[in-house]
Image (cartoon, rainbow, N blue to C red):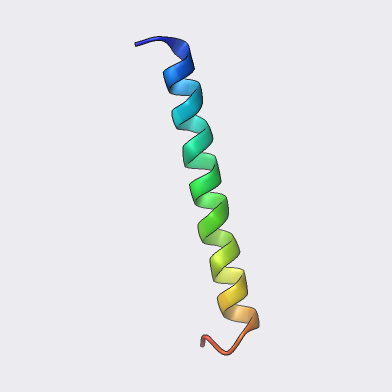
Length: 33
């Protein structure tokens, strides 16, 4: 596999974890709890 594959995968993982954290923050700030 070429390095760009791992770079892209690492980027996807970062955006995924950031997105989930963002969702949790929105959930906490709204009437989700």
